[in-house]
Image (cartoon, rainbow, N blue to C red; front, top):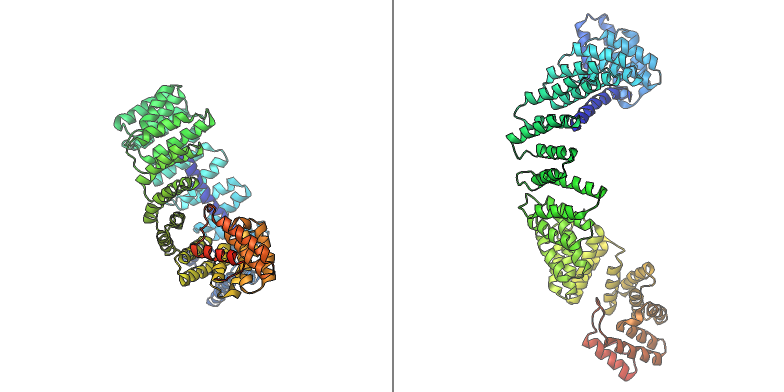
Length: 605
């Protein structure tokens, strides 16, 4: 089936090439022009030297105008050329295209036919005329032109291929076979031609000749088991089951590991209803170390699709995968297919096991490592994330995802130096084609890490880089602004950045607190109170830092008693277990908070 379709596709391609001639009045076919000039040079020139010079001038001018897109002017030049030399085939050919383009098919056909008559040796003119007839549905006329071409150009395949298509359209199967025989004489016997002849003989109810054609193909290539297997398949598809079985056995006697014949024999058993033999034969393919992985892969895909359409019994498929994966693997393809199957069946543990086998075979298999990483992240197993990512960054250093999650895992384990190292190595892999959001996040987290190490200059440089890649990176804007406010430097810049975060997420308590604190540091206490109140309403009252800020702001707005309440609340929160992702208060911070409570007064330091 595949061979026949391929053959027909090639025929259709040739026809499309023929049909495309009249699509545009653009540039003329150079080969058509040159061939016509050669033909013209062989006949006596009827024009005087002066007339010939005029013709050549106007013709070249027509070509120039056409290439410039000035089609009206070019048409006039060609028309003038025809007045000078009414016997110019090339001019008639060019004008025929214009007539077609202008919706004057009759005039176009007349001009084209006249061009063919004046230059009978020009292949391209005849090809164009045949395509015109074919587009009109006048297949008999097209056949006549192309048959003439086959006689005139006996070494060319294209006319014969076009004839095969035309005779098929007109259901003249006998002529299809005759034309295929001519193709065979010209280009040699082939699978495509034999299969097409087989199909034609079947259409003509000549089964004897049909099978004889495939038998002859197998005889032509006696050492190519493929053709003998094709013969068996043809027998099987057309009710000659015993002949098919004998043919497969003949192939397998020659080569017991020839996979196409092994699979065809399985099809034979299935067709005969011999289920046990069918399964044994399939196993002999899938568990045969001499059968290529690609073949096994295709068989397993078909078995999976068949299972899903029928009983959806995954135990049979799993059993096959287990047996196959117990053997040494040519590559990771089978294991990867097994993992995908387990994942679709929500069998995560078997999937993990097979995915580990995949990366053992193919350490650079990115999809497998990403899936293993996904499993580790879903369980928040930081050690497993690290174990998955370390070899991944070695084998796939350009894959930013592994650098990122390696760094995050170390960060969450409070291994700051290792986390920073992971991110530094990751940013070295950033290219102009990298995802801008991920690149920005790399630098943003690096900024957080540098600040944790009290390397503020490096931290601010990292935040700047993050905002170059993604100017609206809210996390970077917030942290950058807050750390500037803590140092009481560049407060205008900090306010501008923080305001953007509040605009983006007006109910985020952390961002509201940052903005309120920057306003506080700038002495805008009344405004600061508005935003700290909003922060407290949006979970800020659960944070010791935010509540302390609230007390500081209330103190500066003339409510020291309320401020003292908030400071005491902040002290109480500081003694509670820290939420995941949050940092505990430092001893310095707690001493300052205690000082405020004891003296019932705000202290900056």
